[in-house]
Amino acid sequence: MCESVDDFHRTVSLLVALAVYTHVPGADPEFIDAVGPALSASLPEPPPGVFPPGFDPNDGPKYPGEGW
Image 1 (tube, helix red, strand yellow):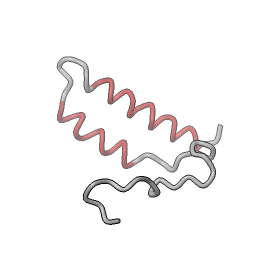
Image 2 (cartoon, helix red, strand yellow):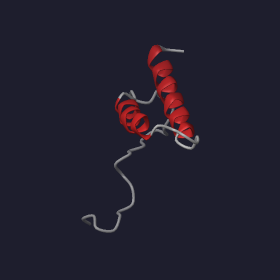
Image 3 (cartoon, rainbow, N blue to C red):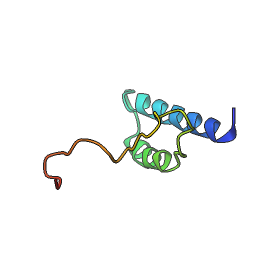
Image 4 (cartoon, rainbow, N blue to C red):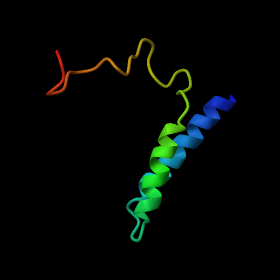
């Protein structure tokens, strides 16, 4: 597997582990608040094939309050 795919999967795995940790009794909310955004910001571009061809994450339904 190429390095960028490994980085993507590793970061997603860490985000999943953090999501599980948030539900553990006694979880440290300050740790979660610090690590969650940092992991999200470090998420590399998804590897090819994760999304279908032509997928545009900005193309979706209009939500209430958004311009038409």
